Every structure is written in structure tokens, then in C-alpha cells.
Image 1 (cartoon, one colour):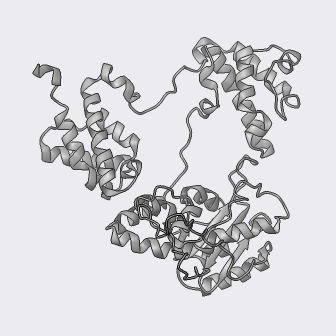
Image 2 (cartoon, one colour):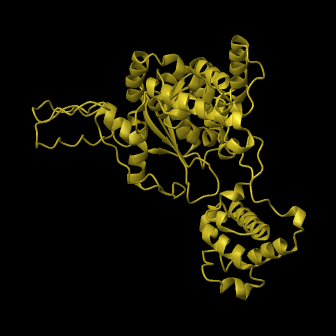
Image 3 (cartoon, rainbow, N blue to C red):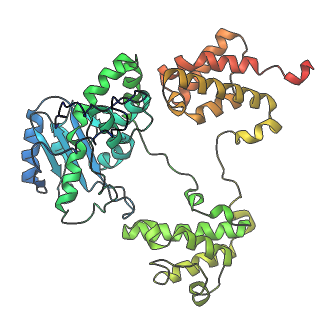
Length: 436
């Protein structure tokens, strides 16, 4: 890392909540720009090159910084188009997984090492897809959340903790491009340049805050992470809430499914085939043929004309769909109803939820972490809607812990929140109106 010159006008980056030691009216100099220590390595795109990388990484020691670049916004798939690794003693390696026969040698070289990732849930699925699975990990974004940093993007954490600025200009690039431009590779290599040092600082901060065990449980939990399977994913179409009537919803669903099939076949992000706005427009107008469809105001996109037959067929299927098969206005779910309906439907549940939510906000503030990291909001809703039946305090506390564990809450979370949740349950059993 580039050292910050020790001059009277230059101070190290300040921790959140501290005051910058600068003279009144004197603007603090910007943090130095992060640069590659060892220069830009050549990209590894052959099996022979991979063998060399694996030998170097296996011979080195310590944790491995790892990152992956995907082509989100350009491709339908979530595959990794570049994998960056850095380990002390081995330097940085940039690996193109696309032309590789297999990445099994890399998995073997990394066996038993701790992986350092930032926002691990974004990269673990695409790494698993190519056979790379960690046995232990450290997530710098999640550590930042547990430590109470208000902003936990990598660039922000690096500037706040290490006092250096990172480049951001290629974060939304199409990484499926070949050959990859040199500036993009430089940007990608910088993503792993500081992860090892950042981890060391954060380990110390977690220990000082008494949150080492919390982090360990969270990181272990991440090892089993699987992306949530979206039920009725078509309902996430932007603007679909404006549609009136189940027939229009059925048309939006049919158009979404047709677009999704085309996008998957072509490996193109769906919005580049047909934007959400065009789906909503067509589902509202319900044109019956190609000419009417293409003349519908607002129906546009690269695939509007090219795949017009598919859109017309989808709309026809929606017109012919029986009432019983049309989608409902509200999505079907296995959880409790939305809390805004509880006051009328289940007043006691509403009182429990309000008291519990306030307690969670207070606890999160005391322990300096986001309330959603203290306890997943869905877990709180489920528990308050259907708590254990016993009201004997010790048995209720045990029931709350067991119920939270069944949802997936970690032991540190259950230990921290059980007392407050038991209090919310017991306190809400009395209807305040009955005391009037």
C-alpha cells in the first residue's frame, strides 16, 4: 500500500464518528489512489497457465483473496468471466475460466485455505458453478455490517479503513467481452489487492468490539449459501402493479415467460430483449396481431419486432386462459400475511410485532449494527405471527430459540434477541383496551 506522507496538512482516514484533524478552512487532501504493487499480471487462459498459477498459489501461505467478474446487465447467465486471486507469496493471478477444460486443479490448490471475499453471496454461486467451493471464508462486506460501518462498499471501506481510493469506472462493464481491455484487467486486479490487509484490520476491530464469534458464525453460515428460488419471478416486472384485472396479469406473465425463454436461449439479459415497460404496455392494450402490437405506443426494444410472433402468441394464450388459471392479484406465499393487515386480523399478533420491532431497533442501536443483521425481518414476522403456545417464561424462551433456529437464525442472534422477544410476546397478551 502506498504510504500517506506525514505532513502537517495530511491526516490518516478517519473512522466513522470521529472528527477530521484539519485546520478550519483547510480542505483535507484526497486519499491516494490505490495502485498495483506488482504491476498487472498476464491473464491466464490456458490449462498450462492454470497449472503454473495453481503451483504458485499452493506453495504460498495465508488466506486467499478472491473475486469474480460477471456480465450482469448483459448476459442471462450468472457465470464468472474472470476470476482474480491473490495470496501472500504468490502475488495476483487473473484467470479466464471460459477456455479452461476444468478448474479442478485450482480447487485442489486452494484446499484448506481461508477465502477472503467482499459480498460473498454475489460471487459464491458463480464460483461454485465452475467447481470452486471454500471450506472457510471471511466476508469483508459482512464484517463491515457487523462493525456498524454506515457504508460497506469495498471502495468505501478501503478508503475509510486503509486510507486509499479505488477506481470504480469499470464496475458495470460487460465482462464477457473478449479480449478484455487492459484497463478493465487493472481494475479487476485491484479488487483483490487490498482484501488481505483489509481482513487483518477488520479482525482486530471485531475482536475489540467483542464480535469475533458473531462473525465466525456468520461466515460459517455463508458456506451453505444458496440463492433464493424466486416464486412468481414475473411479478418483479417493473410497473406490473399498475395492471388492472387478472387477464392483464396473465398477459404480463405470458410475455415475461416468453421473454425469459428467449433470453436464456440467447444468453442475453431479458431487459435487452424487451424492456419491462413494453411488457406492461402490451399487457394493458392486449393487441391481437403483429401490426397492432408494433403500433402500440410504448412497445419497443431490440426484440420487439424480431420476436413479435412470440409476443403475439403469448398474448393469445393469455386471452384463452381460463379464469381458474389466471394469476391472482396477490402473490402466494408460505409465510404470514403482511403486517399492515395484522391489526384488523390478529390484534394480539400486531401488538407482539410492534413491540418486538421496537426492541430490535433498540438492540441494533446498542450493538452498532443494522437491524436486518441482528435478525432477519422475515424471521421476526413469522415468530410474532405464530409464537410458541406456552407462556411460562423459561419454556417460552426455549421455544423462541428453537423456532428461530428452525428459520436459520444463528446462535449469537438467538442469544441476543430472545429476552426481548419473550418480553414482547408476554407483554402483548393483554389487550390494552380491556384495561379501560
